[in-house]
Length: 309
Image 1 (tube, one colour):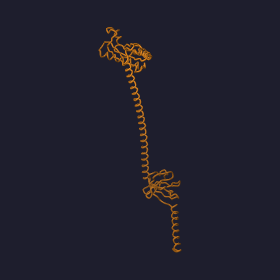
Image 2 (cartoon, rainbow, N blue to C red; image 1 turned 180 degrees about the vertical axis):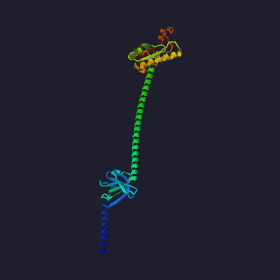
Image 3 (cartoon, helix red, strand yellow; image 1 turned 30 degrees about the horizontal axis):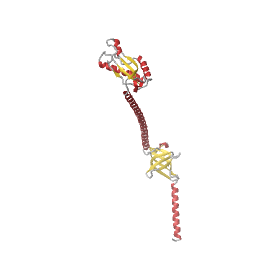
Image 4 (spheres, rainbow, N blue to C red; image 1 turned 180 degrees about the horizontal axis):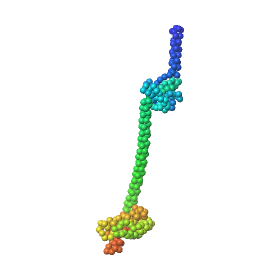
């Protein structure tokens, strides 16, 4: 390659480089126009989607002229706030590019019907978002309610399990006592109380309650005590009715001993309903009938435990 040819090549390269620099200088500060749809905003920046680019940054300034085109020919302008530049709004932008390749907007125009449509879209999105938030709140409330119900069910299940354990423990204690006393001989009557009832009555007269609770307290001082409750009725009336009356009387006395006398279930023999049997008075007289309408409560101690042979 000759010196002349080399000089020509260098000159061409230099010219090309100068053209590139000049073209860049022309782009920076050059007036331009854009059309696109607003995708979003961040402060003074508007993100525009155009036919050529998915994201063009349009920079708003205090001098940016924003207006809505009006009239049949769109020849009139209505000044608008920059707040009108909402996502979904198609706009026309005029301005110049800065060094960061952002278009500094000097003028922005949009059509009235486009603005109304964008507002409707925004309202729909807001309503959808609000409904979604409400649905989320309702779901959280339902989840909280379900969690509370589950916790309550777990507590109830735990209580039932504990109650069942207590029942099983009581049954085991009763079985143990039954087996133990079954191996011993007769019982010794340590104390006794008779509760009388009115004709056809099964409720305990309140005057007997202090006597029953006092008997229960005395019984607790006896080693290995058991309490026997037997209900009776007079022979006046049908045998089946008298059997039922004796049963209910015995049960009501037993309940007082358990609930108010706090006698452990393990120390109570099953109440007996004796009906018309073992009459102690003559049913031919009112006094004899009153003596037969009774419940006999006995505090028992096994003779082997008491040391009585």
